[in-house]
Image (tube, rainbow, N blue to C red; front, top):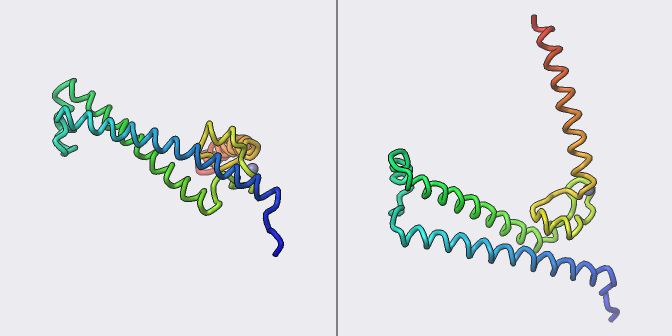
Length: 150
Ligand SMILES: [Zn+2]
């Protein structure tokens, strides 16, 4: 039986492993932060498990505004954590790290900086330019239709 492993597959595999390691590092980091913060808050006993009570209390004291900020931070971090899980799932399906527009692999360097990037640098830049142009067109149309409606 002939081996079906090609050079390209090897390359692909190491990219997969690199990306997986990158995402898992991030996941561990976020998990530790989220769990650490929840522990801190629980230890202080200020939340009592009821967010609404905290939100009511926020209006009456400055100390609780700190809790509110902490709460927002935890929420933000757990949302990021969900995205990391999502990315890991897509990586397993071979659906992560490729450009949404052109299908090319997104550079590993870019994914390290922006793990949830869905476009390669070129497509992202092209999109920004296109969006800018569209905004300009829309602004012009907006002005024009103001006159037309009159
Ligand atoms: Zn692209």
